[in-house]
Amino acid sequence: MITKSEPGRGWSYERNPYWAKANGTKIDAVGNGHFNKIRINVVRNDATQVNEIETDKTMWMQTLVPADQRERIINKYEGTQFRIDHPINVYYFWMNNEKAPFDDVKVRQAVNYAIDSAALERIYAGSLSAAHQILPEGMPGHEEINLYPHNMAKAKQLFKEANPSDTDITVWTDDESPNNDAGAYLQDVLNQLGFNAKLKTLNADNYFTIIGNETTPDLDIGWTDWYEDYPNPNNFVQPLLSGESIAPTNNLNFSRVDNPEFNEKIKRLAGEELGPKQEAEYAELDKAAMEEAAWAPYGTNTTSTFVDSEIDLDKVIFNPTFGHSLASFQLK
Image (cartoon, rainbow, N blue to C red; front, side, top):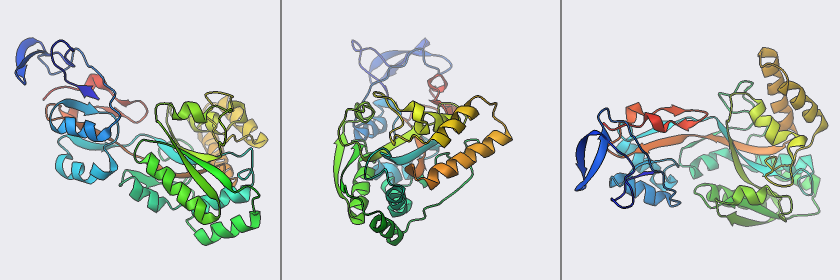
């Protein structure tokens, strides 16, 4: 979040060549409204961030507005201080493909059938759009598929056929809303299927470090997301689906997918220039991975731009890959 602060702690922005008053304190400002200096503070409580924007103590919050305040914020501020932006991403539940019970494709397929994206859309208070594949909309190679429409009866039948010997599992998520609620939802769904699932919620600051460490016990299933780093489908398959990407620490292939056919295709495509042929092959890889139910994708998320009354919302630039351009922020 971009913050304002008192003298002695440093102003978050400067505006010159003229002087202005803000809350009775002199501040330096650039005549064209752009900032010379921006201070970023980390505030974990999203409700606090919202309050500070509404009271003009903070100029921008990077994180999503809390789900329970989203509708109110949209109704009050959309178009003046709030707007919805669309980064390219996928939200999904990973499953450890290397060990029971998720080494069985029928169990993984059962989980995919059991998850109701509509329920998760409600949990995310409208910021999430249902999706059921690896490559999100907007990514080259994306061809919409939905191999697992929500069907709890089908899920339970597959679970019964698989008859997993190990049903005591741990569900992992972080403590940021609504990801914590998504984890709780997954726990409930898995218990309905026949698992004995316990929920482990970690601090968001170290969540990925812990689940990315192979020595962490009980890495069975959990929540994660992935946002585009570069506009090539390799960005979604190389780190997340390639066996070569499995690492003892800082692992990103949380499902520990190590399929020789996938590995060969990912490696070959990585060395080729992206064109229509390669896009079609990435689409085929996406479908093949979903037939194997490597993950349980459930949606793509929007993000939000929420600024205080001094910022010119229309001038704020959002890039779907890199996010907000702080250089574009300026005063009205």
